Structures are given as structure tokens and as C-alpha cells.
Length: 171
Image (cartoon, rainbow, N blue to C red; front, side, top):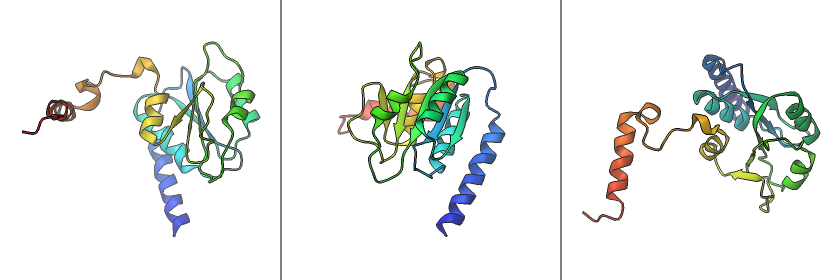
């Protein structure tokens, strides 16, 4: 049953990516899972989230050796890199950083999933969930202020305002 649900979810995520028609021009976020990790649903979920924000992405796939990821960075205009690892063992992020090319400006690296060693190099950002991944990967030029009605909707904006106003208020 798990595999049937995974395939159905993967199909829905792929259809949504096609619907979004992300921008072809400009740098894209490269998305992959760590060597040995076959999980691809997180990759497609992040790609859809970025597409919904108008950010281009390229899903390289599962079980991507760091050397292949480095080659993709050299060959493409890369806005950022996201590497997922859902394995219960620790992946050393220093091995990832050592393999990646030095770019100017430096390509942001975000990792997610339970498989990463808790001691991350300073140039690697850990995202505990998809929402944080998207916030870290979205280019600064597309980020909106917290209370921007055009991005969050007027009702969400009012709800955020209301919640902020009520914080620490017993009445």
C-alpha cells in the first residue's frame, strides 16, 4: 500500500510541476537526494513549492553522488542546491561541501531530512521541514515582507496581525 500511495503522490507532484511552468531563464535550484538515498518524494515536494513561488528548479534525482551534483553546478546557472537524506544514518555534510565547486557568489547549500550529521559546516543550512527549505531556497528578490497582501492574501495578513496583537495578551 505504501508504494501505491507513494507513486500516486509522485504522479500528482509531477503533474503540478508541469502545470506551474516554472521560468526557463535564470538560475535554478538544483534538487537531489544524497548518495544511497532512494527517496524522491521530498525532492518533488520542494520543486513544486519553489515553482509555486515562481522559482525555477531542476530535480536531478535520487542517489546522486556529490561529484555529479558538483558537475551539474559547474554546467548550469545554479541559484542554490538542496540535498535531501531520509536515511537513518548520518551523511557527512563536509564531504558534500568538499566536493562542490567554489562559486562567486557562493552557491547556497541547504540540506534536509534525518540523515545528516548534526554537526554541519557553517556554509550548509539545515531545513527541518519543507516550509523552512522553501524559505531558505527562495531567492531574496522574490521574498515578500511578512505582511504583504499580494503574497499571503488579505485574510492571512489580518490573521497574522491579529495573532501578533494578541501575543502576551490575556484578554
